[in-house]
Image 1 (cartoon, rainbow, N blue to C red):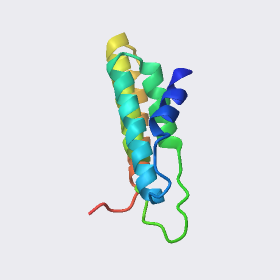
Image 2: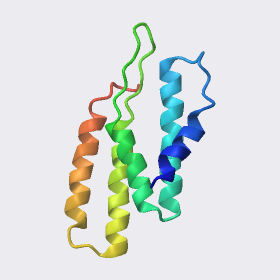
Image 3: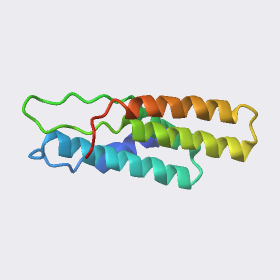
Length: 118
């Protein structure tokens, strides 16, 4: 799990300063989402959960006059819930559905905090 934050930092260090906050945040979030997905597909469930949890708990402060920043915490929370499903199916855990349902409700709550995309 210690390698996850270092990997995120390395993946985002080339972001140009001239970009708007919205563009910078989008690129950082997409990099983090890709990292979490990559960890999930190599069966590093703890690493994937860590990445998705950090994404869903991260709130963004938008500087005045900047473009609107998309709130992707709901998307990260959905991925976090899916990791729970995969872990539960793989381990045949008794409480897997209850944990997943709680995570899905939280994902829905976070997704509702974003503005309409269209």
